[in-house]
Amino acid sequence: YAFGLWPIAVFTALFYLCAWTSRGRAVERLTAVSLAAAALVGGYALLQAAGLEPFARVGALPEGRAVSTIGSPVYLGSYLALLTPVALHFALQRGPLRPIGALAFALLCAGLWGTVSRGAWLAAGSGCACYALLARGPARTGPSRRGRWVLAALLAVLAAAAGYRLSRRAADWRDRPRVELSRVGWRAFTHRPWLGWGPDAFELGFRRHRGE
Image (cartoon, rainbow, N blue to C red):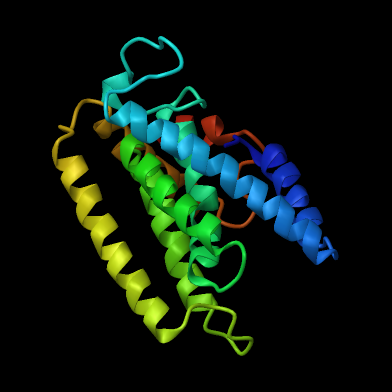
């Protein structure tokens, strides 16, 4: 979870360095460790959402939203959403990582549910949907037809659970500024659609295009 162009550039470079790893066993071990760590974080978030805090006294959760070991429901949702499509991939494949992928996918979804982070839900759902579409290429590395039906059913269940969770969270004053930020962001984009406003310079565009 990063702000600005340069942090995103660093993480992008890290992604490509990992993608260029040529040793298959190293990639499998790295993936297994990443999914196992994410599963622990998601499981911790599930316990917090259920009202259990077995390791530390963190006090009242922010609006009852799970924070796990990350400390923030927004940051936690960003982390879990990043690995949810990866866990789904291994959960639908045949191989030694399938049990880890299935368990990690279940715990990641549970942790996401506990964050009540709409942006994280959208990111995770979009990532899973993109995986389902892109995995149907000539290489046929994606799920089978049965796997796609299972994926569709899972997404439907998750969407219903997310709707139920949101229905219990009343809209408050913080939703109105988010709508205004979206409008200001769109106006700033239409003013400079090609080059933007520069690294970490959204505030400049915001001041020029904000409403009264």
